[in-house]
Length: 431
Image (tube, helix red, strand yellow):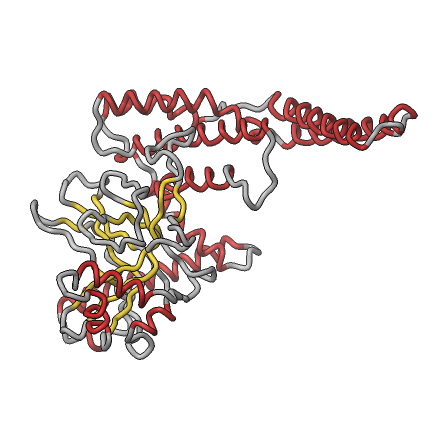
């Protein structure tokens, strides 16, 4: 649920603010879109704040403020709370009004109108119909149900009994998953015996796997015999390190050496035709800057360079769900080369890039590139380790830099900032 809360606002904003490949919204629609974004913003902020492990008077005050703003704007979704009977009455009103407008348009006075007058009259009829239908939908609709009422007491509960995650029902709700899976495996005809049989079978297999995992821990010699049977469990526990310990990003998803082993193949695999020129520019500015001819030395280092490609860095991120300040969650960012990502197009995730200690080519970054707390947003295009002709190893990432479209500080009804691909004079992307 928390994962959805972290992305739903940006997805909704992108969908409602889209103007390039869809019909331009009317003034009334833009006003409704703005209220919808504001409503979702305050609800998600309230929910995410409620997950804090510790609270102060300020955070509790923020929760109450966000909840109040949510209640002030939630009426924009009221029409979607209509019952089936109310929707039926709204459809009937829409049909009756449509028939009445048709009969009015065939009158003698209406036939002599010009095209502009007919178009204006049709638009007025649509607005009137939409208004009356909306009035019918919201007439008997309400948000008077338990879950909306309960969140009114969260701030008081936190003040009295500490943080809320200890009352979370996620642990109980996850126990339903096995029963739901068993129902999906059934033929949906007389499903209860099939659910019991499927759940019992899955539970028995899980118990056997635990027994075999215990045998492997007691006698390592058994591991070779059971290696193909015991499934490795994914490590979900947070990374906890001593205070002051440096945290490193690790590369995962190693590409086959037979497929990608030099810069030409990396450029082809990641679909970046200009990769060779970009790396030469980078080496000339950051590795060979002291040479008489930096670009010539850079080309000499890269002449017989070997490359190992990756598609995902594992990044430790501070874990807010753990009281220990030195606990981290391991997040994965994807750059999937030319391969399809889950049946869709190749994936390029957004990352933060710190460029303050990096020398960049004069044609790459202009003075208008603005930073936010010393960072720049970029799309991750490629990850690889390069061994140059000089024997040195270089861990490199190819990114497309983004610039702020307007104010870099979060603003607007959604409290977010917009970015776009940064282009220099020739209209090329800056990398």
